[in-house]
Amino acid sequence: MRSRWSNLPKPWRFAVVAAFVILLYSLPGLELPIISTPDTDFNSVLFLCAVYVLVAVGLNVVIGLAGLLDLGYIGFYAVGAYTVAILGSPNSPVVQKFPWIVCVPIAIAFTMVSGVILGWPTLRLRGDYLAIVTLGFGEIIRVFALNSTITNGNRGISAVPSPGGDWPSWMSWFPGIDAGTKIFSITNVIGFYWLALTIVIICMLGVRRLENSRVGRSWLAIREDEDAAEIMGVPTFKYKLWAFAIGAALGGLSGALFFSKQTFINSQSFDLFTSILWVAAVVIGGAGNQLGVALGAVLLAYLPERFREFADYRLLAFGIALIVMTSFRPQGLIPSNRRSSELKDRAKEVTVGE
Image (cartoon, rainbow, N blue to C red):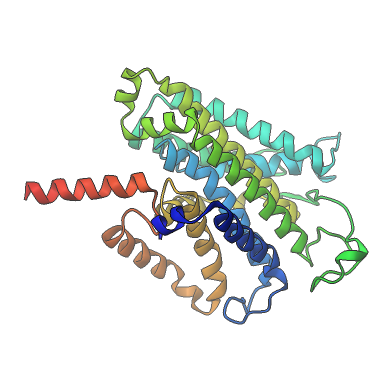
């Protein structure tokens, strides 16, 4: 399929991508029983899928491109969410309040700085040691949110700010949209979904450009062999710090988006299990491939809501899926070309050795 896609003329590829994007924007108005979620609002599930895809794109920069195992990614997610809540909510201890459009850039910048602060002393570690440190970072953020007065402890912060604006009259043709009502509301999530989807597309295009640049090639060299990359003149520490900062910024943006829709935040939302699930989504989808990690994130967010009647067996099904994937398709559902070649070469080496 990859070869057929690459052999298509550019106008055809552009038309297919444009049609797919239009389909994604049209999903809230489509009533298809095969994809609907009977026990949950379908538009809310679409919004959750978009947020998880944004998380997976950020985590893919760290894990899939730079090869850095981050088990505490939810810490950046929490930093971005709490920044918007503290700066914009009337129920936060901060006196000066800011509108949502100002809070989000501050949250992204603050999360990026936190990624640099974490990465500066820890990125000299490798492998399991780095994973343990990042795991500790996620738990530190959760415990701080649980006990700090600025986050209101376990009581959390309500009235998290959201974007403003009302639907114009010309949008009333779309199913579920009433002219004059709020674009971003808890009862009607179409506006939040479209906003999240737009941000996801922009971020994926930006990361794609980075991947094809000198920065992306440096990340891949570091992932393959950090010592060899250092010998060849790649400033490995600088580019690993870049990966951490960019991944942190996308994680913070994801948290800011999600809790702007939830309008309430407390420390119970940032458990270790969720962070591990995000890593699993990247691995299952195909680390290093944006389309793959996006698919993994969508499956992770959508399937539990689609099959809520089997909620008691969710963890069992997830564990079985992980075992099957690691045994029969360790490269993921849609792996990158480089990752597929690596696993084929290793399989040949094992066969020759036997």
